[in-house]
Amino acid sequence: MDLEIELRVDGTEHRLTVDTRTTLLDALREQLGNTSPKKGCDHGQCGACTLLLDGRRILGCLALAVAHQGADIVTAAGLTDGELHPLQLSFIAHDAFQCGYCTPGQIVSAAGMLREAGEGWPSAVSKDPNATEVVLDDEEIAERMSGNLCRCAAYANIVPAIAEVAHR
Image 1 (cartoon, one colour):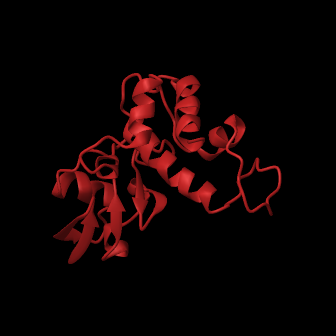
Image 2: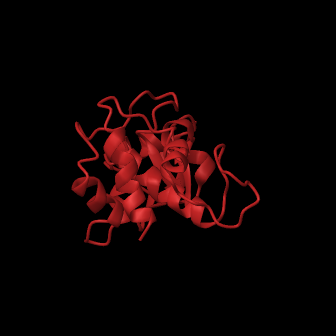
Image 3: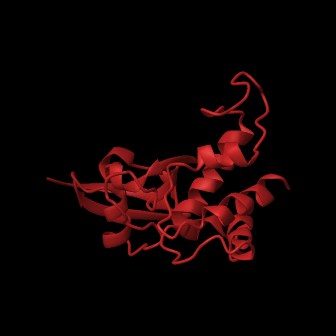
């Protein structure tokens, strides 16, 4: 069964017809030609397809497009307004990617993570889950980014790249 939906992707409104079983990831890549989110495992385990949906991190391969009618979706390509996002600049400066396949998902996840921490959301390693301010040390960043995998093992550079932006 096909349905017509509207999505706002990286600031642009799109109307598209999708099979009700189509994931957001497939709708973005196959119908809108947005190849910023990657299809890694297609099972929600690697984070290569991480998107911001109404400002919150989600895995595009696990979200049905029809369930998000009218949603505001941001991909790594949409984090910028012509200039590179501070996270993108920091990933470049810290050589925080090797093959680059996971990089868009890592950067989108980091942007979402910084917002969550800024709002005081605790993680599994937060010293005080009731604190109103989150201290983003290396352990906290690594825990919050643990859903984004890198086959090349660029983790040693990813955490410092995110920390640089977090501590500005």
